[in-house]
Every structure is written in C-alpha cells, then in structure tokens.
Length: 317
Image (cartoon, rainbow, N blue to C red):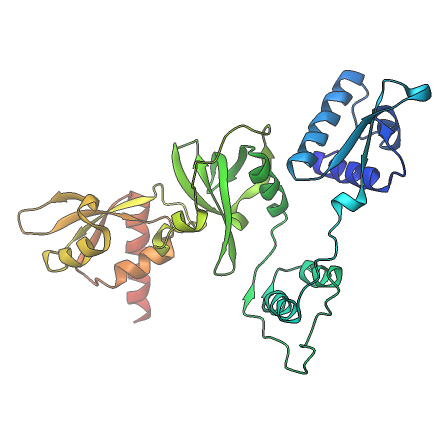
C-alpha cells in the first residue's frame, strides 16, 4: 500500500476515535496496511505520525493507565484540528467568494471551502452577477505530494525531459494556468524550474528534514520573468543556446541580457551570446524577431530544430 493512502486512513481513524488509541489498536484497525514485522510496523507508524505532524495535524498523545498502564495512546481532537468560526465581515465574505469564483482549480475544493465558512457560492447576495472565471488551474494528482514534500523538507526524485532529477523543493507557484516547482536540482547543482504536468511518472519522496530552504527565499522573486527560461516538454540537450547575432543587433541583445551573456566577439562586430532556451517555443519567437540577423550555433539539436522550423515556414509560404 502507498504511504499516502495509509496516512490518510490513519488520519481518519484518529479523527473518529472517541478515546486515545494505542499503536496495537491502530495496527489492528488498519490491518494489512502496516508490515507484519513489529519493528518495521512501528517504524512505519512513526514516519506516518511525523508526516502528519509536519503538516500541522495536532496529534494528541498521552500515557494511559489501568490495564494499559505505560502504553501511549493517540487521538486527534476535532476542536484543535477543524476550522472554527472565523466570523467574516460581509465585505470579507464577498472578497472570498469572488476569489473562489474567478479561479477554477479543476476540483470542487473552492466551493466546499465556502460551505465550511457558511458562505453560499454563486452570485453575490446583493443580486449582482456571478464573477467570470478568469483563471483555470489544472490540479495535477502529484501536487498534494509535492506540497507535503515542500512542507516536510523532503527531497523528491522524478523523471523530467528524459532525465532523472533529484530536487530539493523550495516553492510551488501557479503562472498562466500551470503549476511550477522551483527548487535546487542536485543533478546539476543549480536552481531549476519544472512544470509539474511535464513530470513523467511517479514522484519519489525522501526523508523529512533533509534540507533547509535558504533564508529569505521568495519563489515569486526567483521565478523566471523571461519566458525562454520557463520549461516545456522539448529537450534540446541544453538549457542555454549559443547564438551569433549580427553587429546591427548586438546592442538590442546586450540590453536584454547584459555583458555577462557574451561568449565571444568577432572582428566584423557580430557577437556570440548565451541565450536561455529551456522553453523552445519562446526561444523560436525570440529568434524569429531577428529574421536572418541571428544564427543558432549550439546545441546541435536546437540548431537542427531551427533549420527544420524555418524550412517548414518556407514551404508554407
């Protein structure tokens, strides 16, 4: 059984318990979900309990008496776990309704959240029209796992663009209808951005507390502002391209990327620049603006892609 399913069942059991229950009782209730070996079962239970607590779930533990003297019992008190009455003002409730109505998360979570705070979803109570959905954010099934890994400081492993990645997640961000994971990619020892829906297969999660997020880290501040840095699902063998730019346009590229992007200068005034190409479509659009005044030198796959792309444009002309 996957740990996520077992932890969910443990959460449900501890929430529904009318008294503190022991590990043996938990193991009996969740029969078949923990290993048969007692030591392995105890270790798995401790990991599950730690994961719930890292997520902010208040597991109450007490040492029992009577015929269970000396044994630890566990329970989640609903009064500490569930959201109480937050007593929203009318204008605060209206703002919350607008926020939920204008962003669709691909699920009914937003509507259910309104019910939990006694706000009726739909048109405003003053008779105004219901807000128009302005953003549709798909909910990838791996998002909850990534959120938990971020909260628990767990390293994650997955395949992306045909390569194995080991990432320390620093933040998750939604942009332009897609979710992005930003973190330190140990495979290349650099900060990288991954589009969550482009992750191939399952995400493997390591132990809790494996790293710390740099102090003052702001995921929105480090998120690439250049669309050519945003990842897509096309792997050209490198994240940076060497582009030879005609002397007439060197000033334009220099203003965009600065002197640090210069790879080499040639006698005729043309210059080779290092240009981000993680997002091949955005790179294509950038390159097209130079018409015949820029040439891709490397990587070879990207150069061939540009040749094929230009030939296809010529064939349609």
